[in-house]
Length: 500
Image 1 (tube, rainbow, N blue to C red):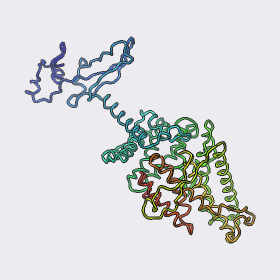
Image 2 (image 1 turned 90 degrees about the horizontal axis):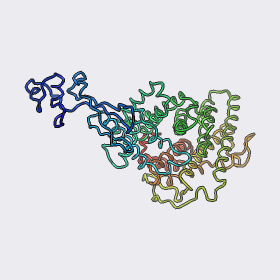
Image 3 (image 1 turned 180 degrees about the vertical axis):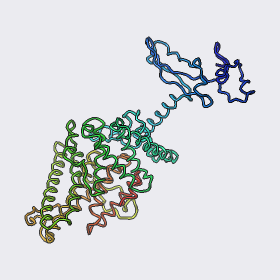
Image 4 (image 1 turned 45 degrees about the vertical axis):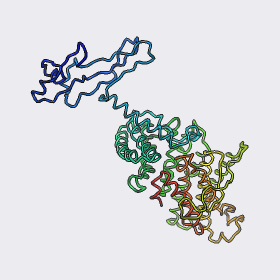
């Protein structure tokens, strides 16, 4: 090596051809050969002080002008350990080495994810009872490249938008494409397909689709939802009963339910084993119980759409059964709400003056709610806005079933039974629950909640809009909800631009 006493002075090409060595490689120049340079290929050996056995860490690759056969064994050099007494032996390596590039890439990806979590989500998300699966992206092992690349794509897009960095957003597009490829490779591998990191990668790509909408449509997002459901079912219930697997499963449920509602279909997620066994080691939170109630909606709606194909007697029997199930869900929601209030000395929520201007932030509909709700905490707000949205879906559905069986039931007082059916009572006023959802938006969309707010608001807004848009007399509330949804889109969920 040039300038090192006791080392050969020849370049790699001359040493391979056993030509006399010189300080300057004139032979290569005269023979018109590409000079291989003087950098020797290295093997990095991890040596702990006092250890009896040496372990090879990584070997650098040859330069482009070298072939493996041109590197003699004598060119391999062993690095010496740090002085004894150091806590850990540290080794340097050149920027050409694959080890350096590998660690640099992984470090860049990890730093992107850490920046994503620090700048795009509130700190309380990491400690809340229903902690989001997104916090797992920094903790799951990245040996599975699909997770490394997919989480980096999601993080680059979010951080790029956060700090107005178009180059970083553009970079996320190439990472997303690579993430899709790496995910496909992982799914082809039977062992990797069962790994939590592969499911997390699939979820990261799904959220990327929701945020960036690269194909300018909702098909990509719902395609990812379909893939998530297939992967969870293939992994089986046992894979989702504890640890990261359980946390990831919680994250799959709402997208899975929304997908089923969109397609008027049921799913394995709503079968009794999947509704109960994953919580054998973990108690259900209030939020999880509300999601349980929502999970029953796709199956009920699927049977409602089948009613016209039944005979009159079958229709009547099916309607009675559907109404009974709806009442059971309503009682479950009452129990959840009562449990949230029990043992609390403070209120769950209370009205405050709205800080929104006289017209909505979207600028095209009047702000109908000069007073909005403030909540005890983010967890309470996220739970109640979903609970109220489920009640809009449930109560409007009950009213439609009652009206289908007894068209004149609207003539009766709300507190009077309808034939053999119990009185609807205040459930006729399901618009009140829709207004509760509207009055919750401002709290959850405040800047301090970052992306957590839009992600919590979106399912509730979508459910209420779908429940009211064909109902007469609610056009103003629907317009307000659409304006709120447009605000959510501006906060980072691009797929909403293509929603109905």
